[in-house]
Length: 266
Image (cartoon, rainbow, N blue to C red; front, side, top):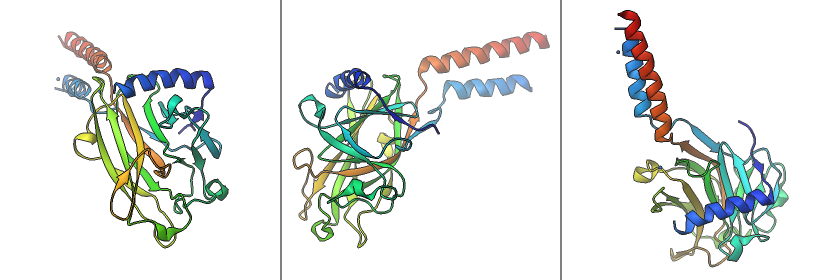
């Protein structure tokens, strides 16, 4: 897999304008039998292949609002729920607790991930689209952990936070799914693996956002109000959804091959 990259300010602004406008308003025997089977497969194909966003290959350190990470054919824009989407504001950091533990000073960061991950800080969140904006995808799985705002582990409840994944369809409608982020173990917070399920897992989106809630001991959870709804995210698996025109072109090509095969046999 090729590493990802952060892109330029001009590209950031272009992507941000594009992303936000949709987010706020907010996818015949012998040869003939073989070709026939292939044609059916092409016409009813599920997502072609998966793309993984793992944040490897870049620097370790702070990330400002409106910066964009490109990897596996996706754009990940880092934002804050602030005027201007947090441009110039610290919204997160690329973290690697093995290579640079000092990226998590005075916080309680996950202790069981030895690779680079993204930490959404100060109520920051992620907005994800295909790099070819408008192409559809499905959100399949990811790894995540809560990130504590204080290193005092005893101050966190059994459910420290929620991670909400909200996806927008091409018609502007949206659905979401919530995932519980557990409190710390004796050694600290730990990453867990999460699979999307049900209708959400099988819905095609053109845009998806990942944002956090922080919870108290009474089970009340809030987002975008405390600067403490922080989380680590890694290994986001997206399934690309072929556009109808692509399946049609493949189907027409295979149909042509079938016709040619029949003519040769005759």
